[in-house]
Length: 134
Image: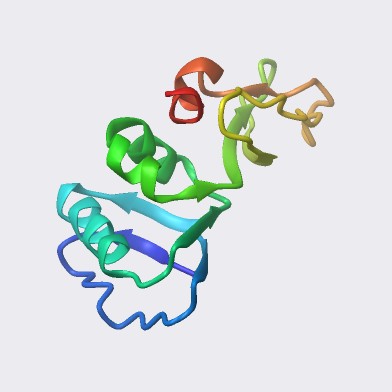
């Protein structure tokens, strides 16, 4: 599991992988700057793995996947974390969504714990999931 901020302070060189398939749980990645994205790409380039799966990609990673096509081409993303908000009381949260390349997924939206209204995606689906259809 990768967690925290991916910046110039993270080398990722301490991660040793020697299997043909790698699964990266990205749920706890909060922030990625340009140097962090460069180091992540370098790490992926140096992996001996032929199949790199990313699961539970949070908004910081999804934003990067949409900005850097090279990253999206190196990862097989199976699920993402989608930010949601209540249109009535503005309570925020997130939901997990399974994704498949080539299409924008249906996101199962919960009801708000505070007021009972149906939550809405806090992002535009076509933009948020653009990396899947590029």
